Length: 491
Image (cartoon, rainbow, N blue to C red; front, side, top):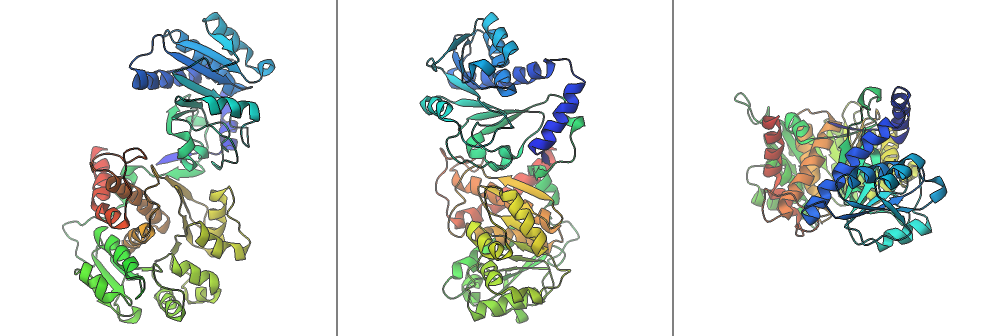
């Protein structure tokens, strides 16, 4: 698992490290790592480094100092370096003097660079770029390497409220901060430079699952398993108007290594026709025993949907509630009365569904998505999986993980139905609901990557991907699981 620390945690740890480090040594160590990343990107972009041109956008304080000292190291590799000082009176004096001694120059213009380094603001800054900085950034037509974070992006929430840098690479020091996982669109690739901060850090505020974490957690059949020990997943989804939601969520549970899937609902014939291996019936009471339920996708919000949701909650097993199920809970809070307090619930809302269920409780989904998800999880004593480009999974006890997406191809009709089937299958294996939701979110993204690329071994991105229908994401689930299990074998 990768840890993510708040800026307050980082600053406290840095203060302790600085107290026992020679003056300036930590900055030069960070700057060397920054310069290395810049050289790597220059080689990728131009094939070499000698004679290439780099412009530093230098603000006040330590971020500007990191950029200036990186410029010194770049000069030693025969890179032409120009510094644009946004606040000359407050530029880092030692770094600026060192750059000038190394042959760097100061200018008021970008100087036609091959690459730009964003050292405008650091972790203590909040809000958008100021007009002068925004005007400079708007002129940039080459890749930008951001120092610690893209300027103009909130370091703790990843929110953007005006002009901001969109980096190709963000180089951060010591530990990842929330911005690096909550806003990958502006951060680009994140590279971590070790400056010895680890021993000073407390427990992380957020967690990011790695492939081997998912591979270890994902239950796969062993020689003594049968269809019951592998997990029996119940699906209460779909309707006469929306049978596709039932097909997708049921299919995800089937492909996610459930030992058995039982479907209960009005789309039984359609679901049985697509997935003959599952057991289908018309209502929850006749479905038989399950170890977890998925309820809500395409269910409808009328009396029939309410009855189905109440019946599922009454079953007293771990339950994933999505889509119409969330809308029903928001409109009919009394439905919670059917819930066994010992039976975990995972809610999987998108932003509008979150607002429906959270706003009556006085919880607003503002810029701080992590705080909002945590508050709702605590209030409802449920795991909340808040969908988005960076999916946030919060447990009632405050544990929170973030699963950043690599593209936006998952923003398609039916994609969420696939995710709920994955969650349900993992809940049925007895996995901790918070971890089950996190692993499902990871596999969902990975399946989207595989589905979006013509070559299933490649990683999807906005340039190489293609629009991804949910049925293609569904087909790619086995490949996503194999990727997680392969990471375990490699480890």
